[in-house]
Length: 429
Image 1: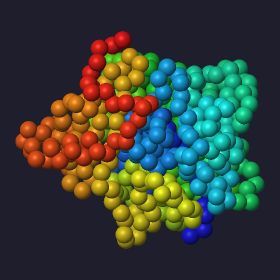
Image 2 (image 1 turned 30 degrees about the vertical axis):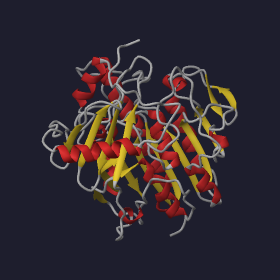
Image 3 (image 1 turned 180 degrees about the vertical axis):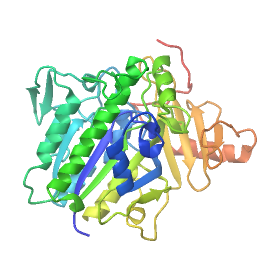
Image 4 (image 1 turned 90 degrees about the vertical axis):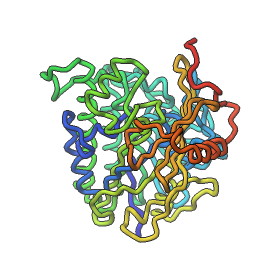
């Protein structure tokens, strides 16, 4: 298997149900639906966490939230960077000869820190270095490698990232490339340059804008796929599309109402910041014409699996502390697909949001535990029969509840930066 080019597209706050290929009826996503039809669609894929920071750290390091260094989002804008000892996916790819670029939102180390993209294996970086600044879609400047550069007046950052990605791919490469295209859409604020093709819809303006942001992203991913064909590198390029967690929520009723209106969480309970499946169950599309067959898989996978998967594909060395399992057998229709035993997620209170929770999935049996804080009463759900997590069976199956709680107490490593509160619900500051 020759080393392919790799384009990894990460959406921000895109829900499982926001794409037509996953059941969306109101928002148009024709290019991603085509990608789903031409590639492999995963129906049981999980993000690394219910918020941006730990989810992206899991993606890059291959470690789940219990073992990973970055367990939560930064508080009050103070981003915690990846450390020099945290080996990430890009560094593995660099070791086997890849040219690498990060375009879009980073969030794992500000400029000058040990976690900045060009300090972690990226040859090129253009975008936002941190979470907070990425909330401005019309920035006056963005980082290009180690320098802040002016942006055109009134430019929409998503459009800048798309053009940057297209230009970067057009270069005459003499070796395989890895493009990490980390879009900020459809994260709020919902203020795109226009809300076509939904301008005439009888919806609240935020709904029209949200839908337009997703369709705009879909359009631009279509441009990227078309470019691969124009350059005649389509069959040499592996393209991956997923989302960092469930659809957006600031625990505001108007956003929650919009998520329900569009069915953005699909059939699952909750949304961003929840450790119920609505906050962590995300779309995953993988396309590599001529190598990966088209189809649908219910293989249970998570963000930590990308490190060993891509390392196996390119012939790279997997760090010894990785929690992921390669998905190559599933992707190439081969026997011997390994399976997780446990998957773990958590959300730690931040700022005014006081709702700390943990969750644990026993992949072999379908039992899932959810707990508020480290001392809260365990909730127990059987996902194979109750994907909406509506029927708490903790009192019905006390032995299973005890077993799940014991494992939940063991799986999380100590963290001085993100101590787990005893209480799940605290008064607002």
